[in-house]
Image (tube, rainbow, N blue to C red; front, side, top):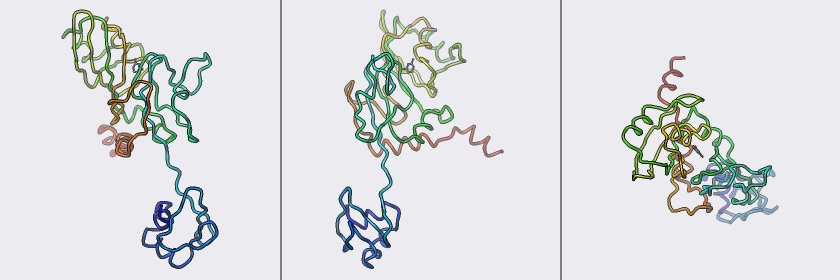
Length: 248
Ligand code: URA
């Protein structure tokens, strides 16, 4: 990276003022003054007026297609496989954002950005999650209406934000269900309550992040566009709440 860009990224100065600092001989790299346009390599010691300058640490955002029979934890006292064994730490330990059941597969975001992780899991921000559920039996109009009207679970009511029957044969049905909440085993409990227990469950979308062609057990770094969209999702306060906040 060019020295003036490094200074601008580190927040010391605008690109133009960074150029002036360099031209004035106020910037040293590994003890020596450098001219405009010279490059900085990782590990170089950059100083302005003798004060060490560093780039802000970049957070890591990883998208994993979690397999079934893997724990969404960093360690498991019972010795089961965990997501930490799939995603290498690479010096920056990422932790899961929310959780998927042991038997559930699909999109799981892992990050070391604690602030974003907190907001993405906070019910206040209601980030949408979409699951593809394979369930027992033919999901008929009555069961769909029941689900849409809201299911009474032991920890409160639960209604999907969206429901789409992908296929419904005699013996099994496939359904895409979107929730803004993330209560324990919520999707499984909702289908159990309609007498259509889940056979398999895959999270196909977490907020703006779609599972896409990522194979089970593989992971990739989230794109810049996905990270920006996650920030937007985590910043969006529901309308009603904004109105209330406005009145206070
Ligand atoms: N709902 C479930 O039942 N299980 C999950 O893993 C996620 C949502």
